[in-house]
Length: 76
Image 1 (cartoon, rainbow, N blue to C red):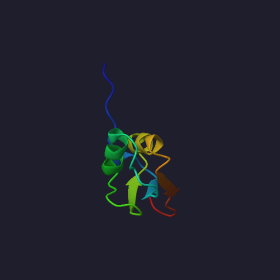
Image 2: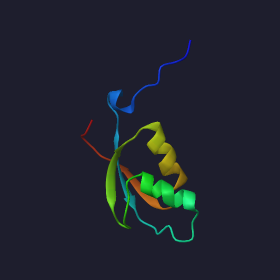
Image 3: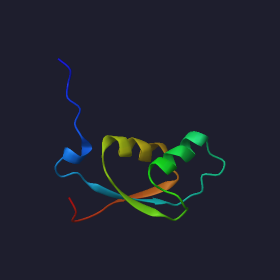
Image 4: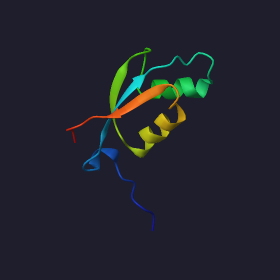
């Protein structure tokens, strides 16, 4: 029997991450530039808030040298 996929929105107590783009992606691969865009970042210095799902965690790990991450306190 196949396992059911768990929807990220249904995860109770999901943490929120504040992701800030701190270093230019010039000179890095197209895949890393696309990952920055997929995180919702458009300009250097911009900050977005994302749920800490496994997908977002993987993207942040791939561009960890270009972004800064902090956990938002007091939000669920």
